[in-house]
Length: 223
Image (cartoon, rainbow, N blue to C red):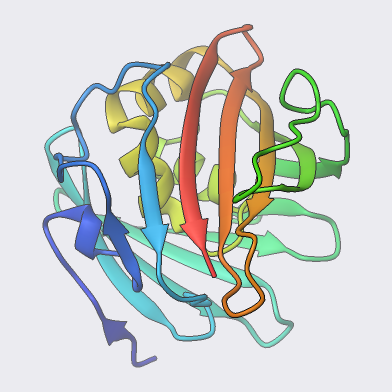
């Protein structure tokens, strides 16, 4: 399979259409759970349809992500560490909303909607009125790799991708979540820019782990 290569050692350039509003930081930087990170997405890119390839750094190790759809329309993420010749091939089954690795279910995602998902529905501002709120529960088996946990969490978002999750949260925090929790809930609060000319959206999100640890808020924008 031919993949379109968009690799970069800086994950700010790894995901097509992604740029960083804050200074570019290494993916292994230990972000504070309460640090607000803004990522601007200038275009809606389906990384699976485009068969994007990207390289990200997780705790000092480079990982190559390859994205594609299988013949049944399921998302396929192939992950390879620079320290291994073997790949993890993670399949997101669109019918069951489960993540499958080597024939075994290692995670799942469940979508629910809750107007109070960000501790009370935000009314926004005149420039950024409230558009929608949602919450999605993600889960993974104990022992799931950090690279796979990022992929599982990314399925809760539109146009963010695993590298966006890693960049926002930091791989040190993700490693802590992978080692000490079995999932949690992603809360999203979306505002739409008040314009009749352009359609810009701002997604403010946070993650509450199964342990009760709260991470975020983080922000990314798309149009």
